[in-house]
Image (cartoon, rainbow, N blue to C red):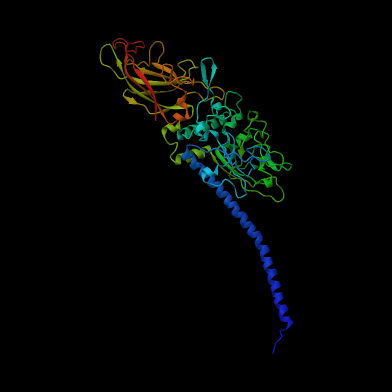
Length: 516
């Protein structure tokens, strides 16, 4: 016998299924936003992690490579500009950009990601004097001001990549330290001379020497949203605000918005945007007040790494969704020292200086009586100032000893337009207590510490120069200039004056060596 089930039972089962589907649908509707939010959180976490990894990898590379790597050229698309910040592709030939130009992060060299979770290549900007391009190692810039007369260029010109193309470290750790010391001094000099109208001094329009820079925290209100272009630009009325509220960085890594979003959040005074393309031109300047920067580099001040993400649903006025990692010059110096770099005494010198030691083994040669040991006195002088006020630095070295090393200027750095060569003099204190000779030139040997004439051969005994131009190059960085004087010096009879005789038959000899 076949038993028939009532129709009501079937209807009850279909109803249960329908209810279950509704419940499941509701749960999915609730969970999907949560899943999306979780995905965004994970993407943001990965984004921040990749930037942090890039930062640490760059610091490691600076230690092992004697400097930072070059930015790479982006793939050139329909909009032209090889430095377009919104490009997601890096040129397949991995072309290194010239000094002073920002580009893409060389992740392949660093062992980190080159592209962000938002599929944009990381933007990378680096201080050119801290790059380790071997072919562009530091070599001082000099010029022939008149036939046969040479002079050093100013420190501002020495560190301007559009003037001196040989300013990187050359992969030399000591040159890295010297360049870093010089950059910190330049930054400080600009701040010290705030508001001074003298054009010879460091001025705010030399800010290009300390690019890249990062904004101070809490400066976001100085950006105003431009709905036509889709980003907020820097609007401070006083152009000096750009310097006052930013600091120099060794390098900056930035994750920009993807091209589909078009906007760059805040312009950050990098470059003017090209219409609605979301790209930055190669040749542009976002702030015409800085006339000195009207060229190919622009004024590059990036967002502070501590700036939080802001997404106001009502207004885009203060929105920001980018990410930045940056290392200031001071942080960079600390990181190098912690890694054992820039800790030697010689690494205190700047790029315009030599590390010099003095060796003294000179005694007197009287007509009768016993010889006495003579104390050496060295003087670094400004030859443009009349003696005796021309001495910049000096020190005494007792006979039979070698002095501690000291950083001596080969040329001055106190102005932005001139560089006075420094003269080094060697004197001896006579048995009678007189410093040098009592008539004529007071010194025994004197001459330029470094001769700016690049065509001259190696240094002679110091009658005209102590060292040639290459002594300041990256190839010689980390070497000590040793000036050794030995032998005897004729003096007048002790019963008379006991003074040094400049034209005596016996004089000491001095040698100059540049050694590790």
